[in-house]
Length: 188
Length: 188
DNA sequence: ATAACAATACCGATTGTTCGGTATAATGTC
DNA sequence: GACATTATACCGAACAATCGGTATTGTTAT
Image (tube, rainbow over all chains, first blue to last red; front, side, top):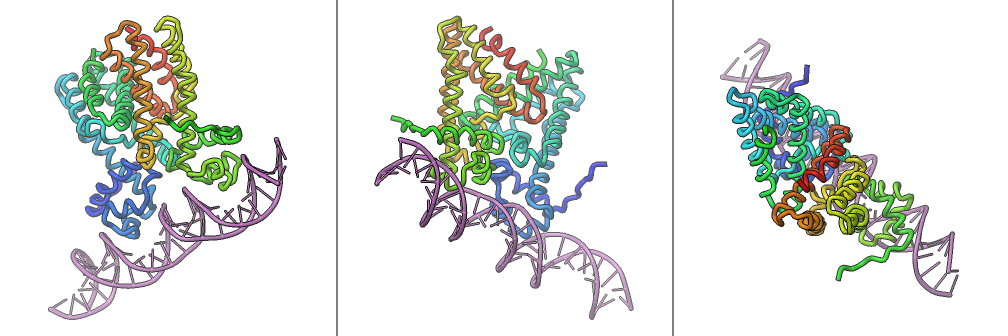
C-alpha cells in the first residue's frame, strides 16, 4: 500500500546529515546550501538522491525520525512486561530521543509555515497514531478509554511544551522533571 | 533605559498588519513581499517605517504582542480581588489572546532558526518575567515559593504544547479544556 | 515650504532547481 | 578475457526567480 522507499546506503547516510539542519533551522530556515555543506554533497548530488528537491529531503528526514521514534520510543510499549514497566521504559527512551529536551520535535517543526502546507495531513496522522498507541497501553493498565486518550494527549502536549521551554530558557531540568513524573501522571 | 519607540499612527497600523504574517509563517518563512502585500505598503515604504528592515519589523511585532499580552492577560493578575478570581480572569483573557489555541505563540515562533539568533535573550527574559508574575500571584494565594514557580512554569509549558497540538490536530477543544482546568491546577 | 509618507524602479546576492558531464563499479555479451 | 552497456554517485556551472534592501522621485499633509 504505502510506497516503501528503498534507500541506497549512501542516501541513508545523507539523510542522517540533513536531519540536524532541519531540526535546528526549520523547513524554511533551511537552505540547500546548508544541506549541501552539512552533507558534504554538492547541490546537484543532493538532487541525485532526492529528485523532488528540498521537500523530499524534509520528507525523508521526517520519515527517518518517525521510524527512529517508533523503534526506540514506541517499541518498548509493545513489550510483554507490566504496563508500568513499559511506560517507564518509554520515558527512558524519550529522554534520549529528545536529548533531554534540547532536540526540537520534528512534528512541531513541520507543523507551520510552508511545511504545514506540505505535510499537514502526514504530521496529523503520525501524532494521532502515537497518541493512540500510548492510550492503548493505559487501557491495558485498566484506565477507562476516554481518560486514557485524554492522558496520553496531555502527555504529548507537555512534551511539546517542554521542548519549547527548554530551548527558550536554556534549562533542561524542566524536561527531566516532566519525564520523571510522567509514569505516575499517566497511571495514577 | 530601554529605548522606548514612539511609533507614528501609520506605523502602528502597519504593525497590526504584519503580525499575522509572522505568526503564520515564522520569521524566516515570512518574506518582504508578503509583508508588503499584507500591509498594502510598498517595500520601500516598509523601510521608511522600519529602517533596519525585516528584523526590526519582527521586533516591532514582537513588542506589540508583548504589550498586548501584558495589557490583556497579565493585567488582570495585578487587580485587587481574590487570587483565584484574578487567575480566572487571566485564563479568560488567555483564551481570547490565543484564539482558543489557533494563534501560534510569538515566543515559540521567535525561539528557533535565525530568529533565535536575533532575539534569544529578549524572548528568554520575557518568558521568565511572565512566569515570575504568575508565580507571585500563587505565592500571594499561600503557595510556597518554589512550588509556585514550578506550577506557573508548568502552566506555560502546557499552553505552549496545547497551541502546537491544536495546530496539528485542528482541534481547539484541547486548549479550551486546558484553560478550564488551569485555575484548579495552579491553586489546588 | 517643510517634513512625513509612499511608489517606481532597481541593486547585488542568494534561493531552489536543472543542465551537462565525469568517475567508478557492476552487469551482460561474445 | 575483452568489450559494450547500464547504473550509481557525484559535481561545476548556470538557470529563472526571489530574496532583503536602496536610491530616487513624487505625493500628501501641515
